[in-house]
Image (cartoon, rainbow, N blue to C red):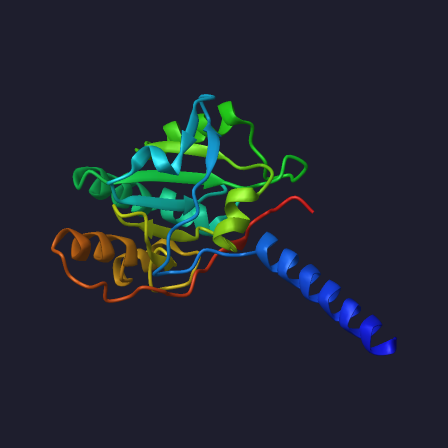
Length: 206
């Protein structure tokens, strides 16, 4: 009797663990990138699957973060977006800031900020419930991901190699996203598939 009870308890615990693990599963480099659907700042619904066959960059953004401002005030993020567009790469900026956080910007305000910064991202997506961010394991702003035309996640990590909030470090750093996109365009294996993401914590809903 005790043995049966123990077995039942063990199975229940295993099922709970599996459910929890599935709920917090994170995207893994080398595996298929999780599909998602979200509205952009104009209210248009965008799905990752819309861009099948194209390389896609995901950028986690929060204008309230000094690390994000470093890359936008210094022009590094816009330059990266422009180079990506020249390679026919789709660039999706994702904002997972919760609506109750002081950093939260309404879609129109976020769109204005991106426009003021002259940021040529393909779409800026609103992820207030954090589902996309948690599916990818996004921890920081910025946190960068690259998905190839087959839908495989091929890069995850930082925008560059110097984890500071100072724009003066941008010229000295290796821009991992630019390097990766250039290598992909040449059919080369990526020099770096996973790097350390740095920045402010993503302001998920608590």
